[in-house]
Length: 139
Image (cartoon, rainbow, N blue to C red; front, side, top):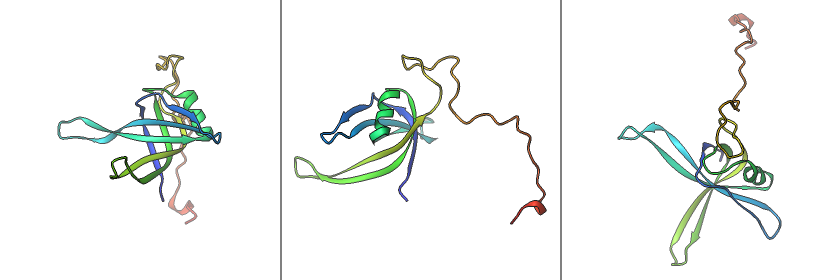
């Protein structure tokens, strides 16, 4: 299965275009921090090229800009091509099929609001826990 889940910050404003056939296309790069420190004690980041089409492209163009955090889901596309010098090259891009906000709401300038609500999972801490006996399980 070719599935890519990605969380990070946009390194530049998304580039939005409409193809000659009328399809919306949005290209952007996400800086995604690695989950471990390097030998110098710092976290490295990978810069992942992404492209989105249709409604997803329009959503990203409308609501995201440089520096904002994004969660994206899609698949990895690898293409082989020959450059102008005749050399064989490879290109890797994540084709984003779903995108969502990650982190805090932003004001009109794209800066996080001081009182913005988190857009993560709701707090269910007030729901009482239900303890089960192993004999209650159906398997």
